Length: 280
Ligand SMILES: [Zn+2]
Image (cartoon, rainbow, N blue to C red; front, side):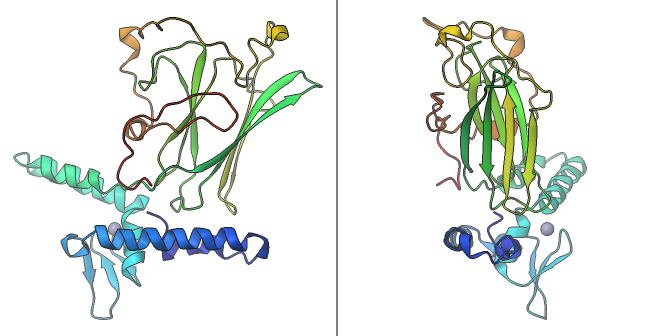
């Protein structure tokens, strides 16, 4: 939950043009902060301590915090989470008799705040006869020191949908947001000059441009990259057994569900199960 006071520097830019958007973001942060204060009982947090100066300390990370909200934000941050994981691992090693409750408590601490906003733009470069998709994902509440990541995933690797080789998946991840995935045509990505990623740390927007290699069979439009790929008819084959257990880099969040189809893209993507705690 990075919506708290410590992260408010994101709105320090006093540009009036974004005032209402900033206010919305602040309102949202405040709402989430109250929710967190209601749902998280700090008195049960073994690392939460109020010192004689009225400040709050994290006894795990030895950090100081001016208020509860700031402390809560810290508990969702990378450093605290890593320390929690380290401690859990250590305790599990020291006390093999009762490692399970400790580990479970550590995992539960990761609270996702929902899916990021995004925009997908279909592009066509007539000079190069190249189609591309521009993804822009907004992470206004991203954790400090976190940079968004993306990853392409083959139809075989994903486990949310029936396997369809006409598609591949593009995933975006950035704590504390849920991972989102887009279903895109399974056309070779051209990773030369027009492929780029950009993290705009000021505006908290992660951009990824995905150019596709020209398709020889696009005359009919059947293999057009953006939304025109043909749906396979009949029951899709099951993935080969060997492909199911692959270790994707972002497995923990995968279960949190794919987003709905990007507007106008025509890539249906049913939500994968109930949203986790913290989704709204
Ligand atoms: Zn801490």
